Length: 499
Image (cartoon, rainbow, N blue to C red; front, side, top):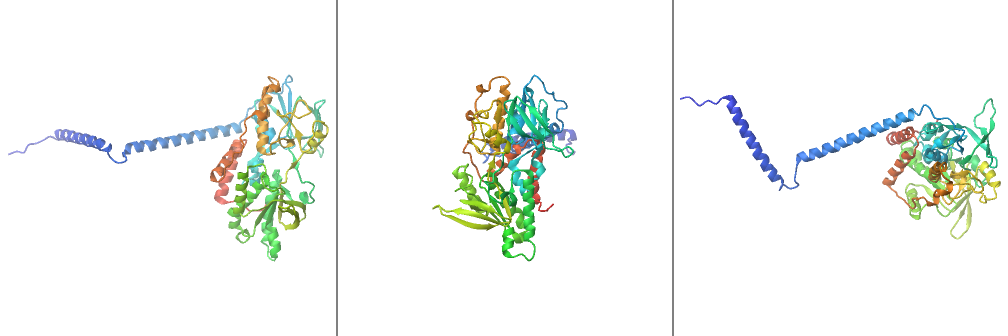
């Protein structure tokens, strides 16, 4: 008896039907069971969700890299040709290349005027990161932007003259300028006419006539000041490492004193505390515990322009970091190795004492430059000797077609980079309108909204601070350099070599 035979083709078809029916029934039951399964587990949906997230991340990364490449290309390739000066347009002269002047130039529509920038310094210095430069956290070149880099990206040509203004004749609208670079050991002097003038020359260091401050101390206002401080810190460390020193001499070398409880003094002290915690303990372990930072402030509290909450947090943070704050302590004299101070207690009693030090950093405030003082003396309307008095439109009181911004002015606001930047942006916007309407028709700075009493602290504030400073840097080159500087010190620490 023959067994029934089934061809391979029929068997395959029959098996396929059974499998399809079985799979269909299984999937149908699984779909029904999934509605009652705890958590409603759906592997396909989860996989699809992760795929969407992955594609989104790839897309955002690609767009970010493309935008970064575009910014780099634009930075390296400015406009080949810029329209030359038009004799029919007004001449706007900007004195200075600091926060106020650069913010003005960023905002200004240069096609409306013949713009001339006069400054003895041919670069913009991002002073907010200068304390970081003094401790080696950021390289000097990372916070410097050549002025011509900025001017080459404007719509119309801006003439830059590296000179210093020595005199102003408001009646004839003529400036006297002297070249900041020498030719055959001679400085060229010439006159420059203007229709509109923006005065933004900054300020000098105020020492209040205290003997020895300039001779024995360091300021923190220019690039060379930060370089001098860094070299001095490293020299003190090496001197303290020498054998044969007495404990008192060793302690003196390791004592840094900062005078001035404003933003500059506080930021530098905080940077020094960070340097001690993260670098000094690794590379100078035998000196780290003896290194001391003291901040002296003549007023009853530090950061008087900040809120009480912000001041208390700063004081607590400094105490936790080992930084000693001494308020009501006025510096009277600075010798080569000692500071003579006067301490006032709560009852008003004064006590004199001596503080040995290795490094003195003076951050006691600003005073008007010589040109500003001369201009104030020549105007009866100028009754404040601390700086130029301006109205709500930044116009200098007593002068027509002359505006002033930044540290050379005296206003209700603190003399900070942020205030100078806001003044420059505001004035640039109003000068753009001035070409079309009268200046009286625009709103004053007093009417513009200002964020006040906003404070934060901790890790979120730290990252917000870094993100803000990165966004404030002028060029993609500076942002890249500073970002890599921060990455470098996180990976390898600060460079402690002396050059």
